Image (tube, rainbow, N blue to C red):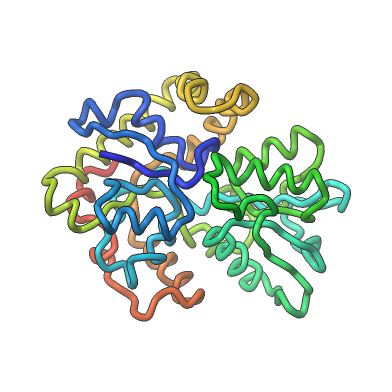
Amino acid sequence: MKLAVLDLISNSYFPAIAAIDLGFFKEEGLDVELELLFPVNKTYEALRDGQITFVAGSAHSALAVFPDWKGQKLICAQGQGMYWFLVMNKALGPQRGALVVVKGKKIGAAPWVEMGLRRLLIAAGYDLERDNITIMPVPGAAGGEPSVNFGLMAAEALAAGKIDGFWANGMGTQVSMEEGVGDIVLDIRRCDGPAEAFNYTMASIATSDAIIAANPGICEAAVRALNRTHAALRANTSLARQVADKRFPQAQAELIVPLIERDLPQYSTAISKTFVAGMNAFCSDMGLLKAVPDYHDIVAAEAVEHWA
């Protein structure tokens, strides 16, 4: 079995990576290997075609390949809430929660990730054309070779003056702040920005209907593995460093423990009906849905009763 991530050196999908490296998938009977695979459409195409078993990524991105959610299921969350940060160049004097700083600026974001920023700006009363806000690919992140971390590339682009800000993961955010280049304007998980934005998406684990049919019990086993991973990291955050030392460069491995400590309050595998309603509204607003499917058309029923 293979679990694909689109972004490796990050806290975003760390619970899924840790579930492999700490042995919890294997102890639940799932022999899972990690694979870095992007862009998002390629990742979900591989899931659709049976080349991988799980995708650990942003929940809404499944719509890149599975129209109206048909053919896939969300198994569980890796953490609650939309998990990206808006960081702006420190030289602009950004203030926490003050979105006015984005007017007339260029902000880097990955495909599909950018949708969350685009929609929350609209919800906050901004108009990208009127306010001359440019949301663009992160310079250097659009090539054909896999990148282990878009957040780090965004931090590098910000430091080089190629963009005025970025919308990316916690690792890139932390690097930018430690280098004295960027400051956080929005951290959605910690109640910045429009309240509705929390439920636009989440870090989830997805699989296909075909894989579920061919592997009875796979969803329940995956949820158990993620619950055990969350519990282990809560009990001993130094385990995060053990995983990061295997997967990350030293500089980023040294940052992972405080990032995981910050994320612990969001560690729950549950996918609530409130979340799905919020995500569907967001996806409809972004033109990603033609219909609004029922909760159980999106979420694996086999997994629900095993959530913590």
